[in-house]
Every structure is written in C-alpha cells, then in structure tokens.
Amino acid sequence: MNCTGSSLPETPETGQPLWLLAELTYRCPLQCPYCSNPLNYDQQKQELSTEQWIEVFRQARALGAAQLGFSGGEPLLRDDLEELIRAARELGYYTNLITSGMGLTFERMQAFKDAGLDHIQVSFQASDAELNDYLSGNKRSFREKLEVARTVKALGYPMVFNCVIHRQNIEQIDKIIELSIELESDYVELATSQYYGWALKNRDHLLPSEAQLKTAEATTNRYREQIKGKKRTQLIFVVPDYYEERPKGCMNGWGNLFLTITPDGTALPCHSARELPIEFPNVLNDSIESIWYRSTGFNLFRGYEWMKEPCRSCDEKEKDFGGCRCQAFLLTGDANNADPVCAKSPNHHLITDARNNAEQNNPANSEMIYRNRKNSQRLIATG
Ligand code: SF4
Ligand code: SF4
Image (cartoon, rainbow, N blue to C red; front, side, top):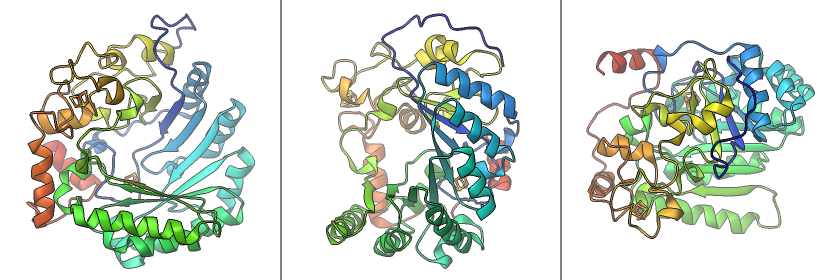
C-alpha cells in the first residue's frame, strides 16, 4: 500500500467516510442466491494481508471513519480476524462482525470479545432447517447458526438477527420473527432483497408480490405491538424499492459517507459498485485520502452535474440523488440515468414489468442460480 501523507482535502464540502466496510474475503461456505458479492467473484482471489488491512483501518480512521464492519464472503475464514479486531479497537473504531456464523466456536467468540469486538450480526435464511439449508446450499447451516446465536447472547454481545426476505421465505415471516425473539435478538433486520448481482439473476424467484409484501409488513407490525414493553427486540422491516415510486437516497449520496474495501483492496463508494464499468482505485496504489477526495471513481457521481434529465431539472434531486447508480446501470445500461424505480424515469416500465411478473409468479429460469464457484466461473465464461 502506498501512503501519500495527509494533505488537506481538495473538496472540503465532501463528507467523511464515517462507515468503513471491510470485505475481508470472498470465500464463503454458503451459496445464497441473493448474495451481494460480484458475479465474477471467483476471478478475484487475492486478499490483502493483515498489515495491509491494518493500514487501511489506520488511514480511514485518520479521515474520520468511526464504524467498521467486518464482512465478506465469510470474514471468519480469515485466521487473522482476532488481530484485525484488536487493531481496529485500538484505533478507536466501533466494530461489527457481519457473519453467517458458520464455524464460529465459543472459544473464537470469546477471543473476539477479548480483542474488543462490539457487535455481532448473524444472518439466517429462514425459520426452519429445511428452508434455511436449501437457501444457503449447506446442510449444517441452520443447526450451526442456532448454536452461534445462543452463544452470542450468552457472551453478552448485542445481536443483530438478519434475514433477507424474498418470495421463498416471506410466507414464514411470523416464524422468522418468533425465532428471532426466542433467540433474544436485540435488533431484527427483515431486509427485503436488493436486486443486484446474484439477486438480479434470480429476481424472478425472489421478488415477492405486492400482496405478499403487505401481509409481511402487517405481520411485522402485529408482532411489534405484541412485544412492546415486554421484550427488548426491535423489529426493522425494509420494503424493497421495487414497490416504491421514488428511489432511496442511495448510500446517502455517492462517496459521501460509506467506504467499502474489497478483499483485493479495491475501494468502492458502495459494495455493489464493482458491477459498474468504472476503474476503481486500489489501496495498494493510492492512499485512502487520495482515493476518497481525488479519485475519478469517487468523484464521478458527486454533486448534480453528471445528471441527465429527468433528474437534472428535478426538484427532488437533493433528496434522492437520482437513486442508485448500480440499479440504473444494471437495468438501463447507463449509470447516468435516473434509477428506474422512479416513476418519472422513462425506464420505469422495467420495474413495473418485474412487479407484474412477480404477480404471475412466472420465473424465466426454472432453477435458482446459487452463488458458488462453479456458477461464478460459468458466468465469467459467458460474460
Ligand atoms: S450472502 Fe450468503 S453466500 Fe453471500 S457472503 Fe453472505 S453468507 Fe456467503
Ligand atoms: S427524477 Fe431523478 S431526482 Fe427526480 S425523483 Fe426521480 S430519481 Fe429523484
């Protein structure tokens, strides 16, 4: 890594990278068909060393980063995770481990605690072994996750129970909520799938109908009322933008708050941005300060100059920044377009067509495509 010192930012109006996501590895024992890792992840096997990661943490912290998420793939597959947690803690980060829980032992969790880890997020795919193991492509996963979640609580960590919600599991949302309460989760993220990468490939299998969504939201509200004042569990239900008429203010603005570093050191303004046809900088060649303030990739969609109509003259552009650049590119082929989720976009029919398809439950592919090396290689070969 090349650290070029700490000269003052050239664009002081740019926000600080307060949230650092360290994707430590793309290796993972699970095969979730909605995984946010790139389709061609099997082409990207290189990983930063322990020292290189610690240098990333140091430089980002110097720029103001305060929260550090250890993610992947499965971050537990890095043998140096304890060392990375300790270094991050010493630098003053609030640290969060985002894990599938696979292979996490009591001893290792204790070691993470000793190293200063603040928070653990355990992901589940469903509320029972059959569906959970089917969706994760791993026959042991539900059993292991249950054990890990119980140990997380036994060790006194605050726990986020995360379950990506989609057509395959939305009908059992009541059971998913009951499981999360039984496990004494502090926060429960019922986040509906976002359609990039693997999830976009599997969209016909994953996008729920509007009626399914409304029922799921009503069920979540019912449980919120039931547990109010009795349990500490907080239920968070995130509606998919496919059923909105305006896009979300993606990442709170491009290059404004979030910084993702991929396993090989590529720096991204959001974890899906690797799907864009943009040459992003790498921490092995440039300092984080230079990447954040001066690289082409991070400046490309800052401000409003890059916008096309209808965003350019829209009075809502300061609210949503034209929506998600990855979604605009993946659906329309041009990252400068308005996010098609917006009803003002001339491409909005791409979203309404997908909604209509979800009503008819008519997948174009007969099988879901699991996120695994074989499928990644096949997708690399077919471009
Ligand atoms: S979404 Fe599933 S396959 Fe992807 S990194 Fe997470 S656990 Fe692994
Ligand atoms: S036209 Fe563009 S800026 Fe206006 S609401 Fe739609 S996405 Fe947002």
